[in-house]
Image 1 (cartoon, rainbow over the protein chains, first blue to last red):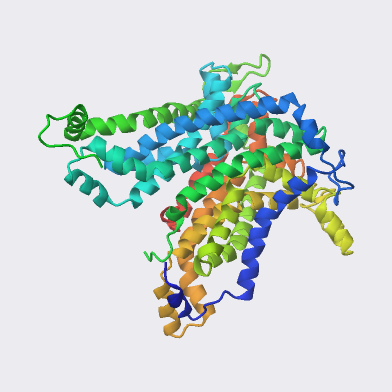
Image 2: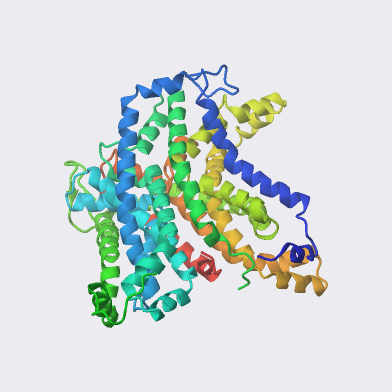
Length: 277
Length: 312
């Protein structure tokens, strides 16, 4: 990062009025709509989305406690996301280790293979899995959902792990070896502590990604209802509209924690300022 | 760090470590095989299954898939209805990408050039939090806002411009009973959902523009607007191209947003979903899914020319 003094030397040290307005417009555009979700969780209007709400109430928070379908869906989503996260952590870390440690023939193809599940639109991943299950006569189950989720979560862990590995200095590893540590000890005491927060962040993001996923899931779930699928059904055929909002508030509270933690643990990796290429 | 004394006989761990040190290929295999097997079987296998299915056909009478190779689905893909679905989706993806680029540029530029410390962290979180928060909740929020009785229609009526909004909603193409039943609503929601994917690569590309280039440009007498046009913007193009891959591809494949917000005319994603769901016609759905794949392959090869892959 350039120092403050250096920054002051530039011809235009301050952003223009128009630029600032444009930047803040984008920030508001991205974040204000969420407030409406919260607001409508307290509305007394059950039939429509009237603005401003005719009255405010907290009764929907009580109503949702009695909705067993919501809690079933929530539990299914948490458990699918947990298994998808663990699978993605193992596979993503292994892939990152291989790609960082070795140079081999076909390396670019492997990179492409890892990126493909998020590079292609979700519907392609979804319908492909659906087509494969149909061909192989695999009935929909809990595990078909997990299979799909783990596949697109690998890349998140991989990206976080490889970014951290590329940033860490090879000198540390050499120093460890010079001081007599074998490669397992070096891994245990040098590489792993360095990598740990990146892996945690990758895992958290994988959890959030799986917990929120709806497009692939609709093709792999059959009768099972994850929370996003439950919500989609409520959106298409609403009964007790504000309950959907309360559910949305709960969902956001569950995922905001992991996302902010992931950001906190990897924030220095994101900062590439001043590195003129 | 634990020191291993050189005088002791080599421990199991150091023997293991030596073993693998001498056989790097074996270690590579151990690392690479599990993820490769998973992605190879589950993902690539599925893609091949998709390709295979697209050449089969559904028997209209029995409702069973006939496992005989045919191009029938692809012939059907090029009928008028399906072509108009593809055209409509392409047009929407293009417009969404352009608007995303326009909205993303100021914030990306501000983040890269002027924000630092706390402000920058705040902006970063403000972009990233929506990116990772629940997609469906975010789509839902626009349904609340765009509804006939919702906030935007209310605001227009309050300032006495309700007639303007009503008039816009009678125009051809974008007509609808309210914003949430119009293409305008679909477009706003798409931009809102995919905008972070445009901001982040663009910001990264702008961040890599060396300060010395800008100083050199102004030292050589360029006005700020000239520096922007001739130095900064060309260097940001790879970032825009990288971001556009996401906005374009994601719009192409989405079926939730046009289902919840917009006119009832279908997009590619909805067509695929309906063929496999209500119609039970997986082969036709598979053939339809080839459309976004082919379009993306073309798009990626164009984006690559603009340096998109270096800015990812």
